[in-house]
Image (cartoon, rainbow, N blue to C red; front, side, top):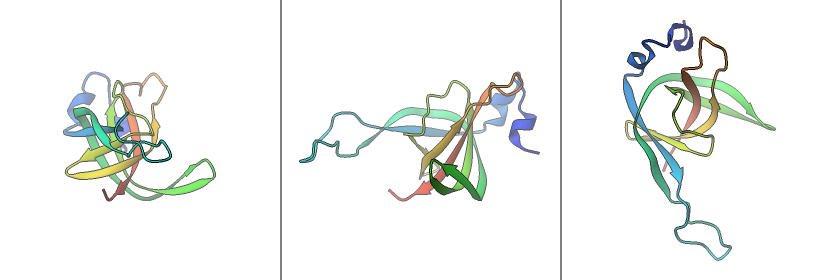
Length: 120
């Protein structure tokens, strides 16, 4: 049974036992000779309630590319997170591949975030 099938609006927060940090590409910073940012990342939100589930090997099509998902993070529906962000959890950094916000009446209280591990 997946986490989505057991989450209910009254008690889903108890099913998010961990916390993570959502990191976002910093604006400004040093520009290279082409005018691009130096690529620094900054914490956008800390102590975000989450649950991490292993999902190694699942393929996900993003545009014309196929990428392999390492894990899924479950976050509250109001978490400020996009596919341009990163998640830091237990000292590891993950690139966000896809953010899914279910729209049905039984699941609008969480976001499912597919990620892959990256070395930074």
